[in-house]
Image (cartoon, rainbow, N blue to C red; front, top):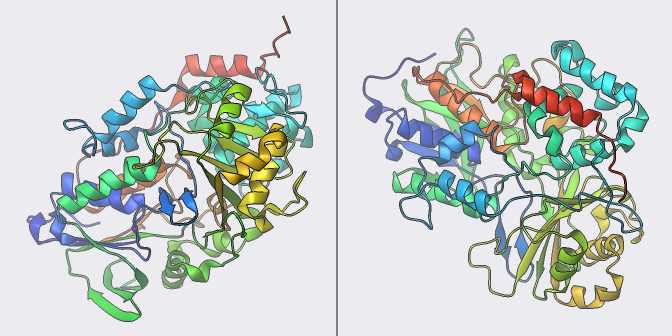
Length: 538
């Protein structure tokens, strides 16, 4: 591990990948490492940075968000630390963290329509629907060690009836779990978010950003980094990293990249640092339109997986990317973003759900063959969104299944067909022609979006700072951190803090993990929730 250099101004840092983990690490290099921004270079193969924290307007199609992120008050300590020194773009004198706090004081979540059945009825979800065997399995899972679980799947621990409970429908759609996903990761989520257990039926603990996450988080972070002099080299794919042949230490010496079809090589100095995002859950994603379905791609369309595969062949302790990249039938799902110029859909949803936009979080259609959910965000959801335009987002966790009304796989459907299926589940078919006329529904198929949840063994994910590393670290969702959970902004920022503080030898602690699983009050409330019965009708 490298010791702090006596002259940070002489040190350079390079990033392979421009996701939020890299942007966060660059910020910490500047704030805590005192490395000048002009000495930091971020290579990104797309035209924009931010990775999955994206959001854009596509001409002729409408607004597009591949995914949405939910936060809470307690667990996102690294995220709030990062954005506590990133200035707001809209409110002089305030930080992005200030904005998030202010917004969630004003717009509070309390869903009144968390689950809806095939008869368009809002279900009473005050009871989790557990059997005594489910409760016993839960308690046992919380007590056993993660190592003892190995590569078990969730459905190897719980009985089939568990996957028909209110709890499972709410938990799996909140976090995007599938029955065949990693039991160890599921256990981590239970520990990490046990404090949200009593509120899962209303999602009252969910915090949002004022706009979509690109506009609210990525953009201000990138603007601040640019103001510090950080170089963003876009449309550039890092293809390989050379390491010193001495296997007793990991020292990156050279970076190979391709920009606009031209190969380039960057020599890494003795005191320089190299950070790499290994893998990408948004890799090979593709969008359709109202009249077309998304195309199917593979990881060759994205360099993050290929780079990880290339360097993993050089060092066994760099992880096993094939465990996550070669199981598409277990990791795919599909999202969709709808842009509307008529208020009919939003007005009917507000009347149906009892929630104003921004206060209801997810509405899940539990009998949907696609396991479809939608969320109506507070409007406007994008910077510059015109008056009279509304945007909402949805997803389907089973895109390979045929719809209940539209007799096609979700992955084969156009935006018009997906919106038709949604209106059928809501009972809005009488207004369907008008809704379709005013809508642009953009489907987005994501073959790797659930890959970070796949069953895994020891060594499948590399350590953030590999053993013996002198100047190299992994960042993002496929690097290993004890106890924290993937598929969160928090995980990306925690890997950034960990990598920077360790490589620079800083006497600074990573933001502490919130441990509600060690708080007796939280555990008692969760125990009572497990035994809560459905309210009796008045």
